[in-house]
Length: 406
Image (cartoon, rainbow, N blue to C red; front, side, top):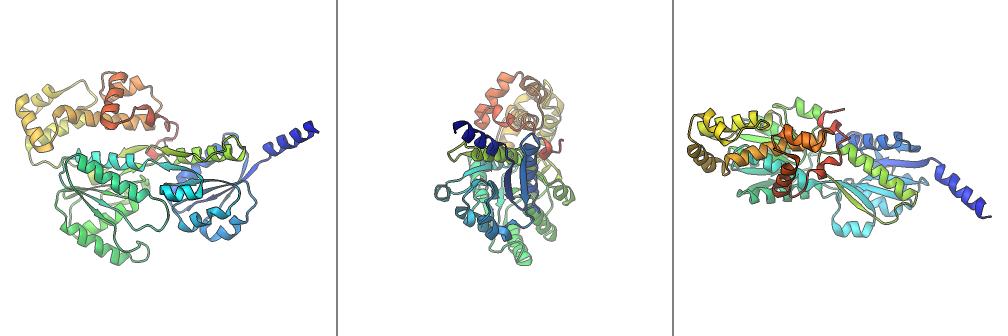
């Protein structure tokens, strides 16, 4: 009797799981997540996958669906509201408010929106700018990603000693494009310039670029812009090409599938919440500027960007610019608000972060290629300046397509 039950259970475990993916195939973020799910399935997990082009319209049938598991987009309010009706195992993609998360009692995977915003803020501050803004949008889902990015960007800018203006708008982009653009233009024209601006995603970044074009606002000279998602087609078609932060979407999808599998096989019984760091920051023309009105500082920053990975320091910069070290430091500190050493360090951190997330090079090699003396010193700088070790970014090293690597 016992062996019969064990055999039946074993057959059930080997039976391919039926899993539905309720995500929007029309969005680059969702497609990246789905690619990650496929990687998990193709790595030896025989699932029958159901992917709908318009999943929200299928909600009534899925709530009564007898499949084994769901992976759902928490950014769609219709899907989020239907979650309690589903009796199978479920993993949500996105960031929910703590009170809602407690009511739903589901496992979730989300991107590190705070880190995304902090990367964007640091990137714009390093351009030498002193005025900053965040351009968000009205959202109707339960996902808190826009709020977290906005709040985190403002906090980071304030920590640098500056203020931040915020735009949300009263109109939904798809329904009131013309009115939304007017609101956006009214907001932009009143802001002090030159300015650094983060948009909540690449789509909003293109709307800001269009508003700047109609207002004859120069990008990046008057407004330096950075978006989120690194949608390569959208970013490269933008005029000028849009800088952007790539999310680790394939890593999110892979981990979501891995977690759902554990839930369906009872290897994971309690709800868990996983946060994945962003992949990399891709600088394009929209933020490629040194916004300082001082020839000494401008030439110094250009030299640092070109030679940060070499064994050079303040003395070499001063020699290149043609001034004494004390004069260089005085100009630099007065206009940029940080030392020449700090500028070298920020540039090297940027290079190291990209190599950590888009390669599988050993830490020592990354340290050398980034201009740090050793892996130990690089780790110390990461902890001191960013608040986390290099290993936090290393976890998604095998998923490089978000940064244009395959």
